[in-house]
Image (cartoon, rainbow, N blue to C red; front, side, top):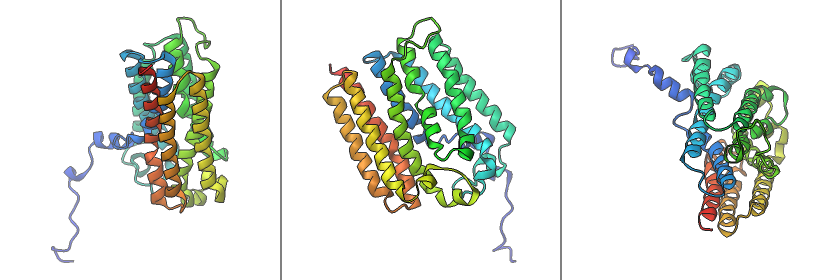
Amino acid sequence: MSPATATPEPRPGDQPSRLALYLELIRWDRPAGWLLLLWPTLSALWIAADGWPGWHLVLVFVLGTILMRSAGCCYNDVVDREFDRHVRRTAARPVTSGAVSVAEALALGALLALGAFALVLSTNPPTILLSFLGIAVTLVYPWAKRFVSMPQAVLGVAFSFGIPMAFAAALGGLEWSLGAVPPLALALLASNLFWVLAYDTEYAMVDRDDDLKIGMKTSAITLGRHDVAAVMLFYALHLASWALLGRLFGLGGWFLLGVAAAAAQALRHYFLIRARTRAGCFKAFRLNHWLGFALFAGTALDLALR
């Protein structure tokens, strides 16, 4: 091989820094993940506070959502590292590739989770109690993919836990009681679960071929040829129940306009996923945070213009 065609030796400066690897580990360049958690949480916070909830709670839930999603990425990548190396989309992740050790990832995840917990400590006892339940569901989710036919349902609970926490933070007192969380707030959690089922099934459709080879359980595999119809049904159930619950909370026309905007986006997703291409399904998944934003914008605007 001539010098002109030889592959150059990698230089130390060509290797990613530890900071760059850590940012990749927590998906810093892909904010869609934490936005999917944030918008329903903020919608619940605005409803519980009957409008602007104040800077303290807004910062607690925005920063807490980012920190916990980042911690979840660290933990999930450690648990799934043996599976991820067989999936083309995840094979190069820092833990899977060995660029970041298991101990490093767990330490970073623990540090981020402690930061989120410190924020929760500035709220009230009911919210603190709920945070422990939320952590427990988050820790269970990666293992559910080995045993549950539709682990997206477990993820739905984890990704919706900000809703009861928002109500507890806005309405709770100083006593250790979950009475601050009204039944309608739990109904909002159940409604949001259908949205998570919709977008995470789209996500699972991207990796279906790889997941079948390694024995991973996902909703895309369980639903089979009914996957597209099921996704659209999940969207319909989410939006219909969210609209009904919003009306029961006293929200009006601007809120319903937000629901209509979200429904238009869901309809677009049908045209993205109907051919079941990797690119189309992944694009649909990544666009979902705009659907959540439409619902939040309608909620906040309705409350502000009363």
